[in-house]
Image (cartoon, rainbow, N blue to C red; front, side, top):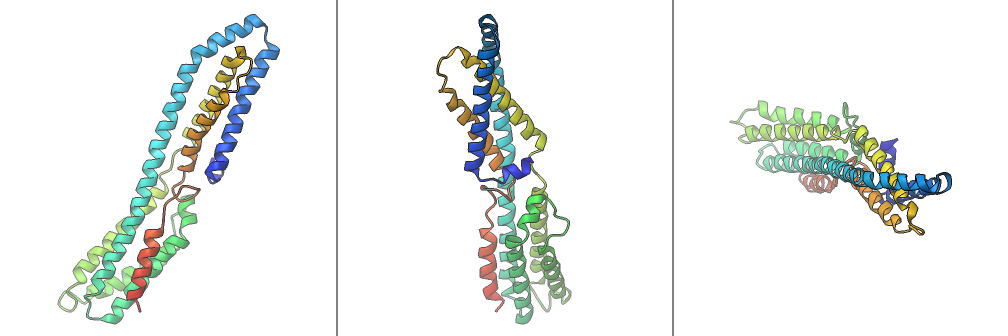
Length: 262
């Protein structure tokens, strides 16, 4: 449920959260006004004022904690994508010094297909965390076999075989980092706690506003709280949603490498 909600556009998440918190706030206020005697209302307002600070502080802490984790994951995912692109580009540069031009073209073709597949076909599985067998793995396996064939020829025949094998190993490591980041998501329990705290804080604000005749200003609180929750949900999955990893470095590298495969 949370995962599906997080894939919505950020503006829609903001509207839904703001509407929900506003409904809780005004609904709680109406219940207190209609169902409680004046003396009981005073007691509830005093209690709500005492709770308002701790609940607001807890909400702010949870939002800050969640944003720190989600933004860290987003940055790590983007860094992994750029590392894959850089490692592939390094392999392509090394192939320019190979005497066997046919082998160089094969490797560049493998690289181009591998990068393109990550950018176009791997995203859905990376978003779901299903990384057991990504579509790009077939091209990565083929690339490794072709590079090892050059390595078997030895440094005497191909002086670049050693650096080429090292670059291929670096590319495999970058792919492993990308796979690891795909499973490094914010636990759902933290999001549920965040939503629960925001709802409780909305109810407390509604009780505090019981003594106010026209408490329309609390709409601002609902919008601010909704903005915080929306930021967390927008960053929840680095491979899906409005705010997600940019795969442009992969497609750009694939385009440049494809020219070397011709």
